Length: 424
Image (cartoon, rainbow, N blue to C red):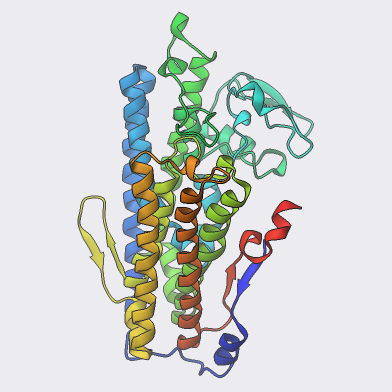
């Protein structure tokens, strides 16, 4: 993946900058502590919402019904709200980036996990496990070794199946594995509609559809247990004495760099490029971030909100309380008040564009439909978000230059940097 790097003019400015960052009247230590407090709150909310999801899934497994399946789906969608707002902590914080694939890896070859439609195809040269269907197969061979999968445990998912054979598309854990098991495949293409897995896929005895209902329930339970334990671990890293917090505050200048790297990389290469522009170029609903549930409009919105609330130094928790304090905005305003105003405006513009996508989807114009080739209205909505994210990244570049931060390289995407390469 290409990197989005600072412009020549920005590099020239950083080379002339003093060793200390600009805006010393604002306490960088206080900014970093508030940033860590926000991270702690977001991961804590993500954990509590995952625990609610776990309880809903336990109810589904214990007494399968349409009502319990719908409740579990609603809990999954609610759990995405705080988690998506944590993605801004990636890229700049290695401890988060190294861990994130366990809980939010996508896209995935869902045939690894469970049954898929015949149109899905079979094993490929790229992935021989694309249709392994571990739920239906209590034993299989991996890299020449016989694997006993008679019990589907968190350890089997995390240590054996996740990225099996070193293939990233073999996603066996995290939110999207759970999503697939709750919704099933979305076979609607660019028409309206999400996955429609029946609740009877978890029923017992003669009522079971899809086969192996007991193992499907076992997989869903194990994946949810693992999600909760992974979030417990990351929540602890941002609490007082946690490794993520300690590493962030150990070097104030490096800490500010981490904030800006996370903002710029998520804004540009990850969200504007890989999650939005790429899918539109390919007109492919399989490139949706939450493709089984048709929840992508919310994922895009809350990713954008995560970028905005880190810059402003505030976060509204799931219980309605607010975490706020000294912010990067304060630091920028102390150096260049006009630039701070510009950055705030760009963030607001992006959130308005993402809100239009969210509103349209909630009104019945689903993200799948927006991706359809020739759908001018859908393209305009998605490109409004893409353009807003790209535009705000240019202002983040200016912030980097104004603060005299050195050595930042944002994530890029061929969809933005070299569009022709997407089709080769």
